[in-house]
Image (cartoon, rainbow, N blue to C red; front, side, top):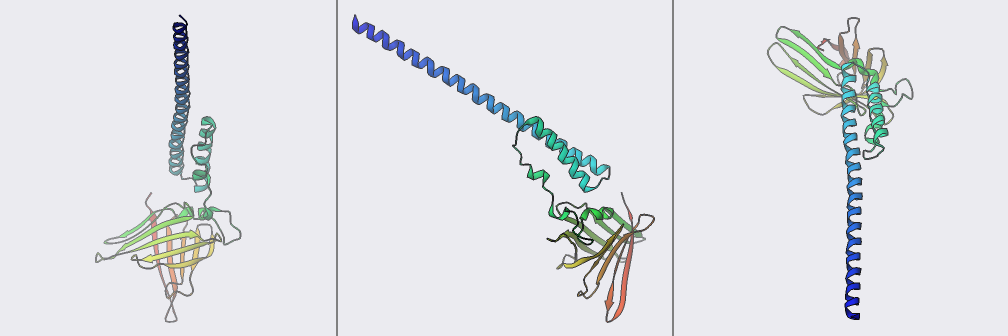
Length: 242
């Protein structure tokens, strides 16, 4: 009789332990599912926020706003989404960090690339079989990129890769790479409303590169300098294609 009682008591203890373990497993699984669901929901919310951010940037471009305004729109969209999600799954530095080249000018020549917004466009001039075009994209990450292509009356094509960036001091430098060969640097000499001049006195030709907009909003480019002690220059005029 005593042995039967002990067996019954042991069985009850085993059942209680198994029941307790099952309860803990159920509670633990529910907690894990809840945490996972919250993280997934937060991640999906941030994904939607990033999509809204890109949409905001696209709308800003269609409205022809400045790059600094684009950054402000993107920053506001992501900040509002993060506030709703209450999470930090995305590193804020990825969106909010200000490129070194977009810093405020330290002096008259150390200036932001955003001042060259008037240069951004697809510029073209066609005269019969001769054509010339230059395309500049908006500054971002402290750099502007451009390309030039010219076709003469005989169908011969020449091209040039162009780049404007801010150095460590915040001053702009113009790089030209004709026909994809080694690049030549021209430092900022002066900048004003719809006009900029770059210079490299040590270069054979040209020594200066000048861009400006006229009253009809056409883009002019002129290269000038000396060859054999004699002044030389060439000039192009383009109209905006968009």
